[in-house]
Image 1 (cartoon, rainbow, N blue to C red):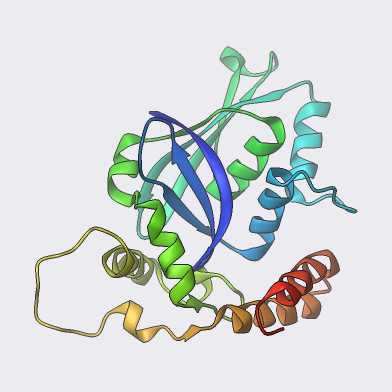
Image 2 (image 1 turned 45 degrees about the vertical axis):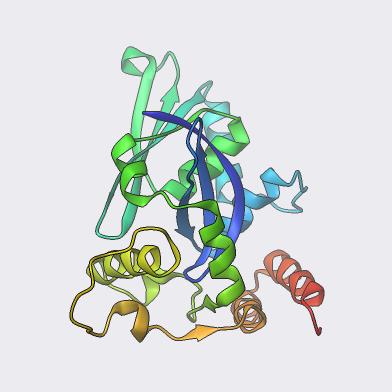
Length: 228
């Protein structure tokens, strides 16, 4: 079990990613999340004040109002192209003083940054998914892939997500595979867009769903883009 921190929310060819950095390790783990989850995490990392609470704020309020706390979160597994996590709620009302729950890593991280609770990553997860920090920068400079929902889960099956994730590591990272007969991969089947096009699509989706705080943030990102 490796202690870790969330460095930032980055933009990658698979959309937004929570950049998890285990202590005393050189590489990082990008955990791919949707724009809403990215907003819930980044606002806390950047000490921004939100006009209205998001889901993680409600969950924090419920935990605190029950006299409980968040002991830690544990990103414990990765398979089928998906990360898995556990949250450990502490309180006298629970047997043994701890309630352990299954959670999406994005939700677990959003809670952890609010409670300032420890974050841990399983070593086997790090060994399989960690990449060099430069990888995300190179990918961001090259191209960004976007879908209607801005989430890889919405257009790929579990098997395809795993293949796509491995293709990203092979394409942009250090894990080079032995040459093999060329075949179409999931990466080749996904359309890539420029950063501006991605932000425009995300802005349209946010407005369609009446998520105006998120839309305002995306609008400001668009205005800061070169040539805008």
